[in-house]
Image 1 (cartoon, rainbow, N blue to C red):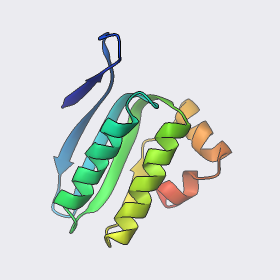
Image 2 (image 1 turned 90 degrees about the vertical axis):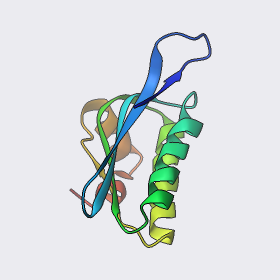
Image 3 (image 1 turned 30 degrees about the horizontal axis):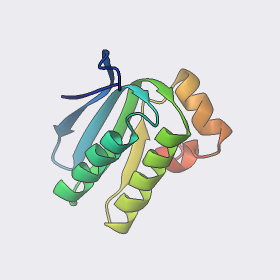
Length: 115
């Protein structure tokens, strides 16, 4: 698991874990996904796509507590990159405020496959 500290060196804002299954690479995100960690999150998702192009990318956000427009942009970029690489993309576990935000900006169905 990789942790990203905020600028003041306080406790981590975000972390992730990568799990592999025969046809899936699952990246589980934890914490706050905002402009302070967008580069790290984008790197984690890009690495998963490039390292495992033969597997579907599943991004689990069940432990994400905050998502702003920067986080949404990262998810949309990862979705587009996965599609361009010929790999399926699916966001899972969105609930509460995170799901509400994704629905308000009308990207929930795109990212989850309508699940």
